[in-house]
Image (tube, rainbow, N blue to C red):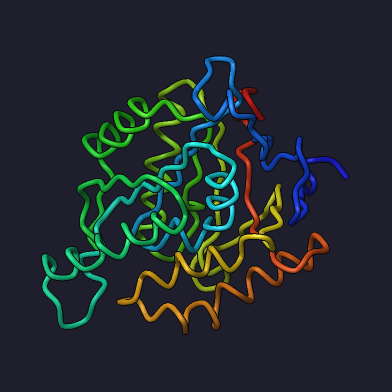
Length: 252
């Protein structure tokens, strides 16, 4: 089977292994930033704190552990995500949770300025997303599948899609799923990533989001999804991604 059908990564990846085309073994020279390096920059853009980790946390851990530059971008600060808390109170709590999660993953974090539950899609918001991505100059961007029952997820995916087009498709664009069946709809993967080796690390990052009742979410949604995707590619646990078919050929 080819990569367009199913790309799997062995849990004990050997030198030369790759995930979504990104190498998982960098030599010391590459790790120090040699211009000839294959070190990649990957942005994972989610609508809320915890979205990057729950949707793509395994991939983020694999790439960060290999020495790549992984950045979690949060469209909002989760202002509406804690019952009984004001927007400012909830945001303060969830920012710290996100920072702790990024430490577990080994990623940087960026917070944008939209409001949880009240995200917008207009010319100004399109420009904000485009400017952020242009400034970061990523090789790969992963974001929400835009057919999603959560408006914030759908808007996030559409903002990224517009930025990718406006920036002349200069980076690879992948979509991740969020609680498929109740949120992401009609999600059809093109690529699978074996996250067995980092599943526990991913879950530790997710559990940093204490305010979200994450143990129940993991048990009820995310672990079953990881198991199901693992069954599809004959491993214990996997994440699935959809690669935009118009993406410009690059490092992948």
